[in-house]
Image (tube, rainbow, N blue to C red; front, side, top):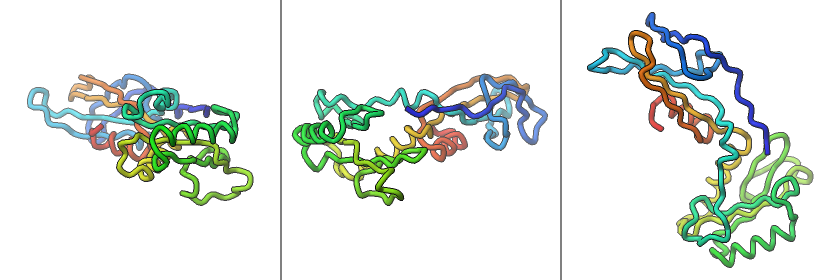
Length: 213
């Protein structure tokens, strides 16, 4: 399991650009104000207010992810069943991988089961076998995993590719929490919130900027 480290943060006062309003944030904020987003709001009761948002690493993103249990009814699967048979993960090697593959084919059909290869060179990349070009295939790539997608997936391959893209982001610590504060003209924070589990910095930034989570 990779170590996910939160960026260096501080808890000093924040000044809202173009105003003389400052506020004390709840929890850590980025050192660079370029990583904080401000949105002017109109509030009939309190006058002009501001929505202020920023990102911190979701340190629990990796640990909170749960693949479906293969022993459950496949029609109840949400994320599918995934196993990594490298010794550093679930273990068991090629024989265990092949046994699991056959078990999943029996459960959901061959079209819904994929062998997944891992490119491991510092960070890791997971993809259906043959889906991506990787350097150093002889040493750094192994077809060590199996993914079985839910039987109601209408395009199993597309579903598998998307899920492996998300899993790659999570495994590499690219999982974020959006912190949001609502700041009144007098500098008081009238509400604050934290939405975690956002996969991919680009997606998390768009959510923070737009306020749509």
